[in-house]
Structure formats: C-alpha cells, structure tokens
Image 1 (cartoon, rainbow, N blue to C red):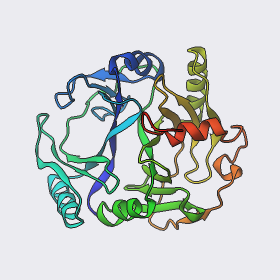
Image 2: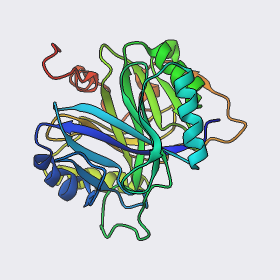
Image 3: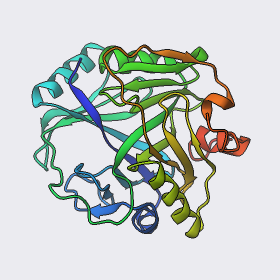
Image 4: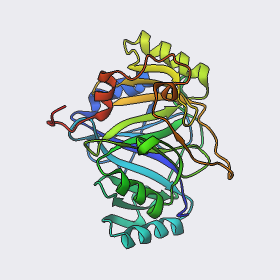
Length: 297
C-alpha cells in the first residue's frame, strides 16, 4: 500500500467560476473558504466536515476535470507515491515538497492525462461548517476512461487502490483506498472526462430532504432517487448550471478485510435495486459521457 488514505477534493473548470458560486453555496450546501493555493480566479468550497475544501471551481473550459486531490497519512507516504509514479514512467509536475499552505504534496498525471495530487499535513477545519444543510464530505468521483485497462493498472499497481467490485466486462470498476467501498470509479468512455462527482450526506432521510430542497430551487433530478447494487449507496443525481453531473449519496458500504470482489451483471436492476429511479435515459447517458467542449456528442 502507498499510504493514500482518502479522496480530498476535485477541481472543476468553469468559464466563469463566480457564476457557479451561488448554486454551490445557496443550493447545494457548500461554503466558500480562503485558499492560498487556488489558481487566480479559483474558488474553494468546503463541506460540513473537517476537510479544508472538497471542491474548487477554477477558470477554464467548462465541465473539465482539472485535478483530483488525494490524502496521504504522512510525508513519507507522499514520497513513496512520488517514487512509484516516477518508476511507472508517469509525469511528475511538482514536488514532492512543502507548498504555500504548509501541506506536503506531489502532483503528477495519470496515463490519460488527468492531474492528481497526493498530500499530507494539509490544513483542515477544527469546527464543523455552520450550515443547516449540505454534504458532509466528498464521497467518490467517477472517471470516463478511453483506456480503462491502463487506468485500472495505474490506480491499483502504482497508487495502491483495491478493486471492490466491477460490473461485467469492466463496464465500471469500483476502487477503494480505505474501508469505504469506493472513492474512485472507472467507466469506459470516449473521452478522459468527469462522469460525475458524488457528495455524501448523513443518511437516506438527508438525501430525500436534499431532493426536496433542490426541487424547490428549480433543480430536479436527472436520475433518482434509488439505491445502487455495487456499493449499496442511496443516490440522487442532478446537473449544476454548467451541466456537470453531481450526486447526493449516503449509506455507502463499509468494506472489511474479508471482502470478496463481485462481478455484477450490468442491468437496470443492479443500477437501482429499489427500481424507483426510472432508469438511465439516453439524456442521462449523454450527460455522464461529458464530451470536452467543442467535441461532438
């Protein structure tokens, strides 16, 4: 194991990050925080938990995944990751070293060009966010992968993730770095883009209250509510004003040392064991395919 402990945050590009801020603060339930490491024009947003931020909105082409940040236990673990990344022939962009906020980080690319950061000793919040609603943490990120075999090998052999479950023929690969069933999921896709990002709330009731609040604000689900087979989590999917697919989720399975990975048939029944979501429509599939700006859908 490399010592990677959890998914910390992601950066999503927007042509004008400030235009998305009201949605993520007032409707989705995050809170803006100062961030000395944010790029010019970038906006960091925290959830209700201790993580410094779970989402950054940064200037760039819309709906683009700019960075995935992962936590590590110690600086020595960051060094270990850096050594394995270099040995695998991947590109190290910065570090390992101390950055402006005192964290010890390394930044590199995966085989499909995504920027990843692994850090230890990063600042966090001693007090919970003073919000009456909103996510507690970042749950997982699902990545579209044109070369899923190469991506799977990198995340498992180099970064030390473990496969928890798969859909048949690797139509989705659920990866974990701690006791949570998954924090990174790989899905076959035409482009190396963000499929969706999931934010955890405390329980099923909170998922449903969040659904009611979103509907009252004029944002209905594109899929859900329902409960997945792999991972067992409750879900409701939405799109933000830029078209990014985002999810409220809860009740993700905790995985013990005796967990045996299962191959699930790729059926609507396993995608939603409750049968309440209405299924994945062609419109939802197109939104999750998420072609880069300018590409043909």
